[in-house]
Image (cartoon, rainbow, N blue to C red; front, side):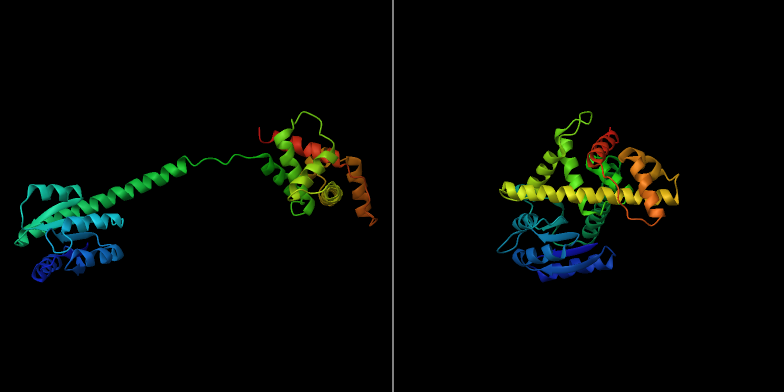
Length: 296
């Protein structure tokens, strides 16, 4: 245990230190002869127990304890007193004093009181550890499960198609966000032009002109088309390596015109220019419905 002694009588401080250290009750890590000096030191070094004189000049023991509480010091207090005054004792207990030691100092009383203080301290520490452990267990047990969103599922699908890093994938994700808040998965998609425009307005800060929105719509359309084409090429290459691949079997016939995927495979195998039709509307519609179905 770590003790701090506050008493204006030097002899009392030395006697208490001798008793504490020669009965193996702990170590005195600091002392002060007045309340004013004690407050800053105790707040800094945070002893486990403070032994403090009730009657001191300038700032008495009760007032010192009150000031220490305001610094959020959470150690325990033992009041040292040669005055038996019920009102003052009551005030001391109200301020959080745990025990009293009477003057003149008696070794047997000091040792008895401090041993009880030690037992109380360790009991509180044990209870604190138990509470922390139970809180930790409860936090783990009742940790809220992350709700899988449409965006999560879309990102997973784009990752399967190896296009999650493509610039157009960000536009696709923005389109999915818009559809998620406004569109029913069983209804036909709104015109792609309308979706491009909504994405463009979201990206443009302030009050963009119609000309700026129109330019951005064309850029979005081209980025998405290139990204879908990249997905088709990735699947075609995968099909050439492993026609029974799970990703190939799942995505190739659902998200794309399979005849175009087969054409791409032929072009890649024969080293020809990779040129196929990209059906953006089909890709976006299937992506939205498929991702939506996986979160229900």
